Image (tube, rainbow, N blue to C red; front, side):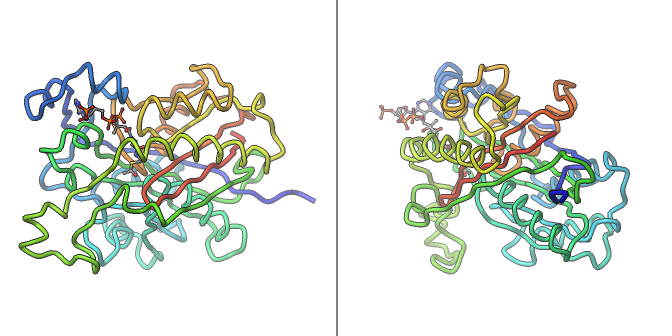
Length: 328
Ligand code: ACO
């Protein structure tokens, strides 16, 4: 019996034009290019304009993915936007993207799983495609973290950038596609990476703004330890489920939060650096957009051969983590 699986039939991404370099940041906070490069791997990041919101980035990435797949927006059955920085709490960013694309009446909703949202989205899309409700899913990871960044906090403001990546998913007609997935969460650690204000726990008020609770807060070194552990574990577990070994992996495509986390995950899989895709140097941490952007770039680089085994792995706010094993 043929095993049913989903595959990526189109990819695209968008990052804003404006670039903020480490040298620019040296003029804004007490930091240095040397500290940022050695501690994180980041050299520059793209920053949205004042007028842009998350759905603008998402819609542009989606247009490019649709074009890549040779499809129109009406030909998708579901629009799923993974984001932690929606345009508004409601309506959803996905509904705004649907309107922007002119995808009349196509169902649309947001998914919130921090930086892991794109992989959670793949797992959700797999269930929906293989069980019937959607034949073709437009999955977008879009984040505009620079609007929830405290630009006076050097421990976070050097890390993030803005961007969106999109893929079109449908049932595979051959043996390529998603082979396995492993996912998890630990809500007890949520306070280590949080946007405290503006929700129903701490509604927006003069006081919440005075206390800067509308900005992202992170205990970076704590998050770091959990990220290293969970990303390595998730990748190993997903390979086991797929019945594959570390030596079978052709490319690791990890969430791009910190070059040291990426290196540690690559080492856990015993992969040489050229088998670990990185773009954190150019974009910083673009959260949920980092994996779809990396998939698009890796595809366009011409390095991928049919049949290559890829491992996508992420960790993020929640905490959440996931890995997907994929045959190209
Ligand atoms: N420039 C110069 N010095 C700095 C800066 C900066 N930008 N930021 C912090 N420092 C200082 C600190 O004040 C501290 O100084 P002290 O020793 O005098 O107190 C020192 O550098 C070390 O600080 P740490 O926080 O321990 O540095 P660390 O090596 O852990 O690096 C970092 C910090 C880059 C944030 C790292 O911990 C990290 O990448 N964490 C993980 C982030 C992550 O994975 N996030 C998950 C996903 S993100 C999402 O979901 C949106």
